[in-house]
Length: 254
Ligand code: NAP
Image (cartoon, rainbow, N blue to C red; front, side, top):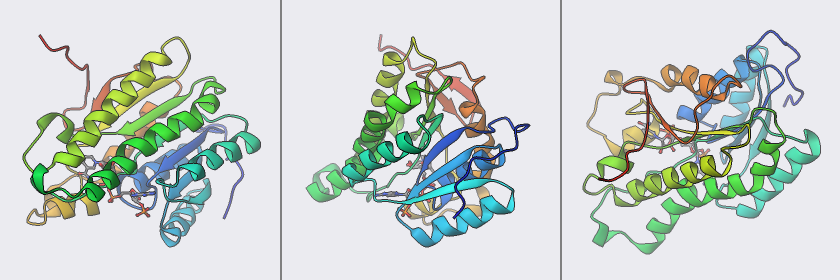
């Protein structure tokens, strides 16, 4: 495991410290690799230690550096310990990518077991609030704190059988927009990203009949996450929509 910040200062995110959750596969892994390639020191969070170690190897091969944090995001005390450890080691955090998520299972609302409902809310919503709660003081100590959270079109489409997932993502959007409002007068910029359908394990579980080859990949999205993480990014409280490549402004109901 390598854990010293990247000394290459010519890269756009050189010397920046970035937490990426769900870094073991899919969108989080691609984002972690792209951020590290752009010069950031990546603090990679997920439960699967072996996959984090493979990520670390891949990051090192591109000359980057990472710190691995095998952690279950529903262990909220562990999130607080992560904040304390970052404070002790670096004294600040520049980039938070709240990406980890679970689909749950697709079924009518009336069939959802309370345990399944809670497990989706715990990862997709409450863990992101706990990350904000624990890491906000550190983002405020950066001269350009960037908080980026991965939402879904499901938050808006409210399709049948996607209930717990859709509700968790709609609530995540309210959470991040509230955080953006609370940090409006600081250098922090808080953004949501709607990836659209991407070729990952989660998408395969949701749409088993779909040909994955027809989908874009997490690697296609990753440069946009790097763009949002850059100190030059100015928007806050909005959604970057990858399918249209637009920044969407939530509409007030008429
Ligand atoms: P994925 O391949 O299933 O990856 C999910 C990641 O979340 C994994 O790294 C997993 O790591 C981590 N994770 C899940 N539960 C966790 C927990 N309790 N503690 C720590 N880490 C946990 O999914 P993906 O498609 O890349 O999705 C990433 C994000 O994009 C999610 O928020 C998802 O809702 C969103 N999204 C995806 C799509 C799409 O088409 N793929 C579309 C819209 C939105 P471990 O299992 O190792 O813990």
